[in-house]
Amino acid sequence: MSALNANELLRVESLAKTFTLHLHGGARLPVVHGVSLSVMAGECVVLGGPSGVGKSSILKMVGGSYLAGEGRILVADGERVVDVARAAPREILDLRRRVVGNVSQFLRVIPRVAAIDIVAAAAQEAGFDRDAAGARAAALLARLRLPEALWRLPPATFSGGEQQRVNIARGFAGAHRLLVLDEPTASLDAANREAVIALIAERKAQGSGFLAIFHDDDVRARVADRIVDVARFSDREAA
Amino acid sequence: MTAPLLSVQGLNKRFGAIEACRDISFELEEGEALAIVGESGSGKTTLLNLVAGAAPADSGEVVYRLRDGAARALSSLSEAERRALMRTDWGFVHQDSSLGLRMNVSAGGNIGERLMAVGDRHYGRIRAAALDWLKRVEIAASRVDDPPATYSGGMRQRLQIARNLVTGPRLVFMDEPTGGLDVSVQARLLDLLRGLIADMGLAVILVTHDLAVARLLSHRILVMKQGEVIESGLTDRVLDDPQAPYTQLLVSSVLAA
Image (tube, rainbow over all chains, first blue to last red; front, top):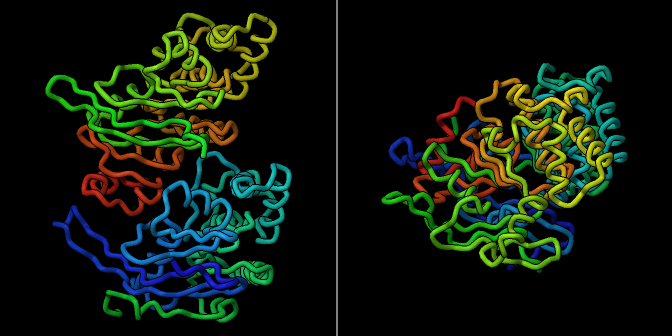
């Protein structure tokens, strides 16, 4: 076992993924192979390449919602190193609470739960007490410019951009050292994009690392420290 | 390392020629919610009943860590010990509320009965606990003296939950708790359950055929088919990247989970 280097938050080694579609005659759909990359503290690594090349699949394997086919996904948890590719469900849940935060492309709406409570619940899961979690949630929603009139409402009826800001606030509500972002700015206007860019910059300065997908060139240019071209790991022909 | 809260070891159950459960093992920790999913007849309700001691297994063992820290095989408990466990540290929420409630006893009596079963005799305190729990499950205090026979389906399920949780159990079994309810009633119940599970740090074993319910309430999933666990893992991993052919079929058969 090679341990991680100092300040290395994530190291992906020789990661591969193939889907087997049992309902379609067991067709095998190779996605990526040989993915190797690392994320250091304070760094934002952006996955680049055209649509369908396997960027989201890599993020999902790092987050644990896709099973890694081969390879290792080493995550620093204090002095410990956890291989997400082999970790038990319980270990992954624990990592998600404390170490690896996640902002998906869409908010999965929970019926009847108010926007601020969704965000506060994430902060509580990450270890903040009820009062601190509420204060954190309010501060994040304010920074992300969600109108205060919406805070106490469930996001089901919000616009795409409003839902996405609740989603971002939830992802940033903990004190996770590694954040995995899947196009968090896709449905945001310029002013709201600025707010997200500022939030990322602030967390980077505090030592968090990011593995992210951004389709917006301007955002990418401003937050990325490095761009990893996923096309070279891809099993698909570039479109 | 302390023992897991619950350890299920090699459970088997046959009904004549049918293998309802074959060699099923899993563990559950405190505060963990496990969903057992599968189609009708897959054996999931049988498994729940075996684990909860509501039906005898042909072979295998269920080991539970009691409040004093001792991990005990359920088969080694006396009948009195087992009944005490079920009335205090465990709960069981049935799909059919008439199995979990006394339909002609007042709501307050339904909740109070479980407290009295653990030795509480103070009327005022029992009444206060019943009123508190009605509030927590969003039933108006004015309905405390009405029997559940006069309640709607959603209210009965909420009352059943209150009755089970009033003794502060650590493990709750649920068999299709939202089955048969209108969608809007389901959403309210699910949200209530989600909050209570998190607030009380409950361990839950939930049987459901509804993958959306499993996604909302559980951390882990066991997928059953013909009496066997054919896939298990993190809830979002099983639902987003199912590996077994049968799991892929289940996931692809719903419109949106």
